Image (cartoon, rainbow, N blue to C red; front, side):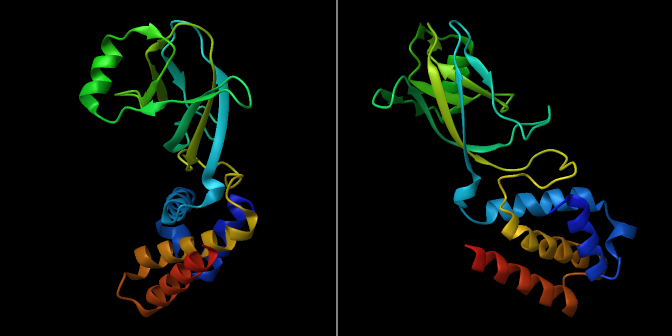
Length: 199
C-alpha cells in the first residue's frame, strides 16, 4: 500500500480532521516506528554483508534506501563469515568508557568486538581495527527513520498495512479530539487489539 493511500484512508475515516491540523506523512512515520517497536517482529530482522578494509575501523550502517539516517534500531549480531562452517561471532562493547578508549586508541588485528560509534550511531566501529579484509555479516532490527517517500518500508508485510491505517486514525483523533474522547478511545482499543492479534 502506498503512503498516500494509507493517509487518504485514515483521513477519510476521521472526517478529514488530520489534514487540517497535522503533517500526516510525519505522523505516519511515527506510527510506523511505534508499530515496529511494539513487538519483536521477526520481519524486522534484516541482514547486510560487506568486506572490511585493512586499517579502516568504521563502516556506515544500512539506510532505508535514502542517504538519510540508518534504519538500524539495534544490532542483533556481527559475524566474520569466511565460509559456511567458519563463522566467528564478534562481541558487543556496551560501556561508553571502553568505546571511547577504543575509538581513540586501538590495536590492529582481526576484529573481536563492535559498537556503534560514539557521536555517530549511523556507523559501526570494529575493534581491534581490521588488519586485513574480513567478510562481515551484520544482523539488525530495522526501523523506519527517514521520510517515508511514497511507499511503506518493504520489510513491513503488506498484510499489516491496515494496522498502520488504524494507527494513523488513532493519532489523528488523539490530537484533534483529545485522549478523553470516546471516539479516540474506541479507535485506540481497535488499534491495540489489531497489533496484539498480529503478534
